[in-house]
Length: 137
Figure 1 (tube, rainbow, N blue to C red):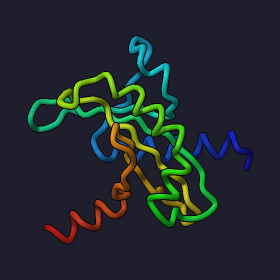
Figure 2 (tube, rainbow, N blue to C red):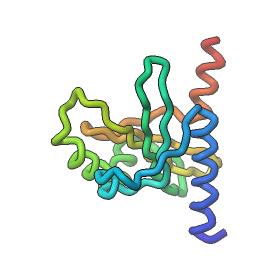
Figure 3 (cartoon, rainbow, N blue to C red):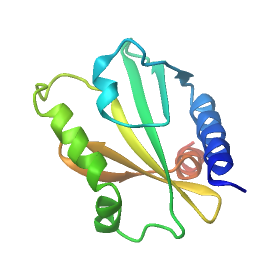
Figure 4 (spheres, rainbow, N blue to C red):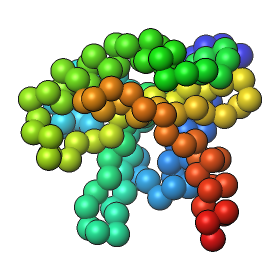
């Protein structure tokens, strides 16, 4: 499989996960700030409180599972720098689109991280969220 084909397949898989979680695809043609950060997908959904949740997803490929937050920070160094630069002038109380990096790992899953103005944090994968919701019910 070529790298271009693999990335296309990953975009389809990630898009399906977003759709299954109630998100709809968005375009960014008229939003100038999005020219300064690279990502593969953007989606949004209306939340129960009437607000709108927007997520930008950047896909990356890893040959192994990410072992630590430090390793993820190294692999996302440029993304962290870019988000900090974009978020710094925005007041902390202003809601901004979420930026997530999804690593495709060999187990055919995504290992996911959110990048904020404060750095990087791991977030639950789609499978882990489903399992936790099933256990809580």
